[in-house]
Amino acid sequence: MNFDLSTWPEVNLQQVRASFKEVPLSAYPELSAYNRDGIHELQMGQGGLFLASDMAKLLKLKPGMRVLDLACGAGTTSIFLAKHFGVSVYAMDENLPDSLIERAAAAGVSDLITTTKADARKLPFAQEFFDAVFCMNAFFYFATDDLYPPYLMRLLKMGGELVIGSPCYRTEIPAVIPEEFLLEFPACLAVHSPGWWRHHFEQTRDAEVLHSELHPRGVEFWDDRVRYLLEAQSPTKMEPWMRDMIYAMIRMRNRDTDGFVSHFMLHARRQRRT
Ligand SMILES: C[S@@+](CC[C@H](N)C(=O)[O-])C[C@H]1O[C@@H](n2cnc3c(N)ncnc32)[C@H](O)[C@@H]1O
Image 1: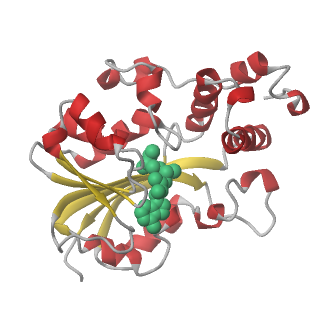
Image 2 (image 1 turned 120 degrees about the vertical axis):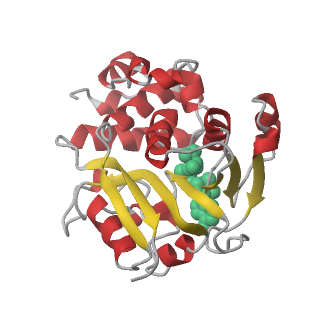
């Protein structure tokens, strides 16, 4: 990428947009019913339903399973999981919008979605209540404490599975790092590498980690998100925080020439503590 950021966005918007590649819809045949708006609808992070679909594939969901959508935001992933897999989803977030109930009804899945407003560190569910936990683009905000994974794993039935999809760094951040990589400071200090997250779960002995790797499209998801947001609305009409966020992502992608800032998925199974 080699455009002049000093002119963004008023002068060079088309050039900026064109510099960011889309994830092709054709790469996800299971999402053929969606257009770009549907993929990113009310999503607060990167990857949209592309990432959600890859995460769900790891879980092997079956109708009737009870799934916690942890920190679900507006609940687009909750609706997706209910609609595509027939699972019973507990859509939970500390800022859950009322609109989720109407959106679930419009999607024909209101009987499969239960909404819960709560702090992820004080979850109002019984132990061994869930078959699966799904958490997209949110885990680092509340889960870096050593005691969080054992707390969360206890909500899963024995053998139940967890999937996380989230921004990450390829390795732990070094002492000296380009300022542009520190997105959403200080939240980025809780963004770790796939290896760090693997250890975070394995050390508890409650979890068998089956996968904790960079997502093959982990870098592309940033570009796809920037492209989508710039096409959905002109920066001149955006709320300042949104404009600043996109600008920060563009600066990061301009500086990160070898994919240090990416996304990963972690898949783990609850096991009896050894
Ligand atoms: C970047 S958004 C992602 C939301 C959603 N999973 C998605 O993919 O669109 C992060 C979400 O984490 C939620 N969150 C952060 N800290 C939380 C906490 N301690 N308890 C519950 N939710 C929390 C926020 O309210 C927000 O909805």
